[in-house]
Image (tube, rainbow, N blue to C red; front, side):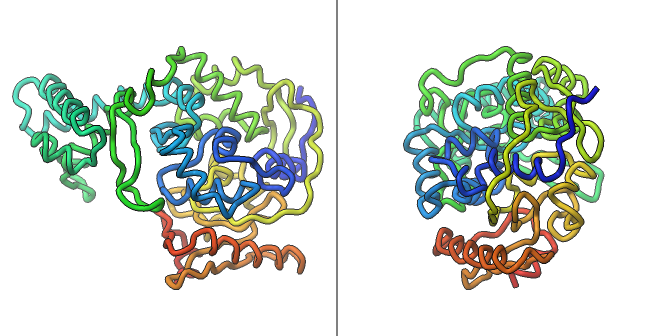
Length: 399
């Protein structure tokens, strides 16, 4: 039997407090934010910085604070993780994700890359051995340079310019050099890491370096089952109540892996609007209400992406999904009020942050949104932020 019912208002209060969005719940630094959210979605580089800034006590310093944590203090790491997606994580959590998600991704990606290389005909009779030699030469070149872009490594190791065919025989067929896939596999196996971008904080062209150079001693080695259980605990603490289906989608695990991790975490059932949810056994007491709050969150923000697509998001998304998400389920920039999405925003070419409310939130909250939009424009400054995945409302607002 479910322990008790957790209503929509309480779920929104939990979100405001645990995701550092309510005023008194703001975080001291980006590492705290990334840990509480179980990672900042890193596919879009700007999202990392803006997601953290929205949750800091001093948001105006957010861009510099994230940059320092990533590249000076090295207390945050960009890592391929859940759903084969790049996340920015505190170092100790990166080790959990590496063991619980990334190791399995590395096996799959290596298998695919060997197949692509074999089909290209460039590797001779033993594509796995040929690929191992390319990787060895790549690591040698990278060690010599210290840090390098993919284009620089391709100049050092000509085999990285070998082309393979992806999605052969389909309308999406394309040719691609193997450099990006070789680096992805080496990173997933924990041998190299992404470092500073070539440009500013909105750049997505990263340099690479040997893992031991960036993190002496590397990431701690954690047993896979223990890592999955720990990741499930952290997700439930931040996003619970949720379901096994939510966790399975969020992690990219199989159903059996998600069920096993939830069981190991000791999750207990509660009643929610859409049926039965799960929380940690020490998290069943009622959560206190939060003071009113508003926030402008970037595209791919972890709060909006924390639960599986579908009815389970209704308590914070309402009916706004079609204009705020793209066709493959990626969220664009959103406006939040007291634990629910109420609109969207975009940066226009002149730098102004434009927004649209999709429901009436009252005069006081509307004024607070306007104030936050103005402040966000100052945080972004001279940079121009274009989400990786376009959504209908963002395209309309960005002009």
